[in-house]
Image 1 (cartoon, rainbow, N blue to C red):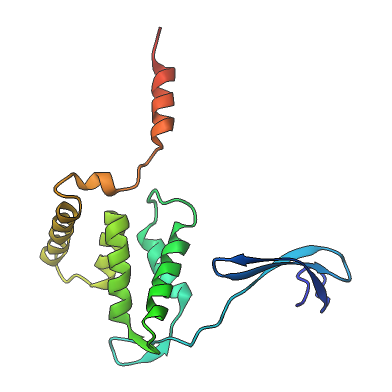
Image 2 (image 1 turned 180 degrees about the vertical axis):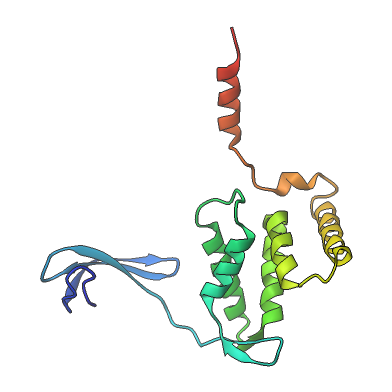
Length: 181
């Protein structure tokens, strides 16, 4: 392992721990003495993606992350939640045990995750993924989302499933400060 600071070829492992994505190792360069972290990930079989036009290409995690991240722009998601969604989707795809999957299947998995997490991100992703031809098809998707929301929460308001913009604690403390004696 080359040192990222001085490019010396040898380092020693100072600490090793299991991490969600594999094994995390703290290393120390033998030449300059600086420490750095590396991650080892088990390499699974290469997943091929069958595109709509018949082409086949290797699965690209960055493409998936980018599309989910674009759908979630300016949404109140906690830090790291996009990466967690991408990891969960990848795990689901690899657990199928297939060497090839269609881009349509990946899109449906993403939309399923986003539908449950954030309706605005879902509509953003669906509008690009499904390539709506007109306003009516877009409205059908919105109505289907509303129906799903009523189904999944037993008729309660869909906003309750959405992430809060501000923490309740922060809101209540600001209300207390704004009261006049």
